[in-house]
Length: 437
Image 1 (cartoon, rainbow, N blue to C red):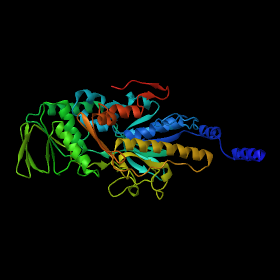
Image 2 (cartoon, rainbow, N blue to C red; image 1 turned 120 degrees about the vertical axis):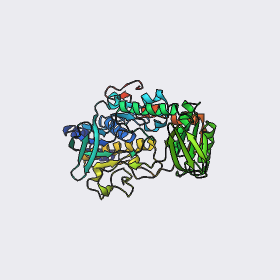
Image 3 (cartoon, one colour; image 1 turned 45 degrees about the vertical axis):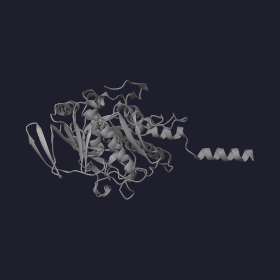
Image 4 (cartoon, rainbow, N blue to C red; image 1 turned 90 degrees about the horizontal axis):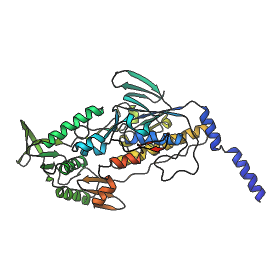
């Protein structure tokens, strides 16, 4: 029996490709061209995790290093982004209030150690030809249109958000001026600051201004009776957020709509639907709807709102030509759950793993084993000054200083995201680098 078993194992091994065999096939080919559209959470997660895997390392989100390294594949990764750097988007409310944090929230791509060996293209994609696997890129600065062929494409261009929800600048120099002007206006606002809109951004903007400038009068106006009225979250979460915002010193006006505004010099007068008038030295509108940045995608890949339709493996739908070579991740994806940076990074890692699995499949002629995304239930964490309120289906509503530390640290999640993405680590030397300033 033992001889039969050994004979079977020997025969089985002889027909199964080894990692060495797959690696040899991979090394013999030209480098894979991987085009990543978007240099924020999802795009960076996809690019850097794929870079790890193709170098024979565990992906950077792994809890512990793999005992057996996978085969290496030659790969050229290009990231296309209009900005000249990585901006910590969820830290925007703090960047628009704190002169100290404002300077470190934007890191130029050239100053991010983890991106060594990744090609950065400043520009935007105007068209994707999924049948030919070609992208038309409008380069910033020159205005030139170039066509780039690719083996794999990752769409991770995120949502268009208007000012002042996020800065609109495309260079760090312009961003510093844009945000400094805003900070100065808030600081010098006679008769206080009014934030209109009680969603997550409005709440965090009001709270961060009050935290950084405690002497400034801050009022938040929301047209509904509950904050976060558009979010599919428990009433307890919304009510606790209102309590914490009031405790932070922000004046709350709920259930009132702003009908008109009149500006005279440096003072704006807001007329509410109950006849009341409020004067402010600075009015911040935080009520705009975000729009997916997907104009470049073939129309049949999008739903009616412009979100990319994907499978659980984050490929385009099977009826799309070459869907197996096209992926999408982050906020532009049509998927369950609230748009969050954690979900975006999670999707980026899945995309990297599935591209790598496809490379292995091409080298071994075996069916790829894909990672598949589960349904994501509604969950949220929101920073409110010196505290935070969180909701997760398994833990319910939690709040307090410990929640702030765990969810956001002391910089609206900047250090947490930087370290999770390992942006300070040059993987070509595996030497950790200090936090970028």
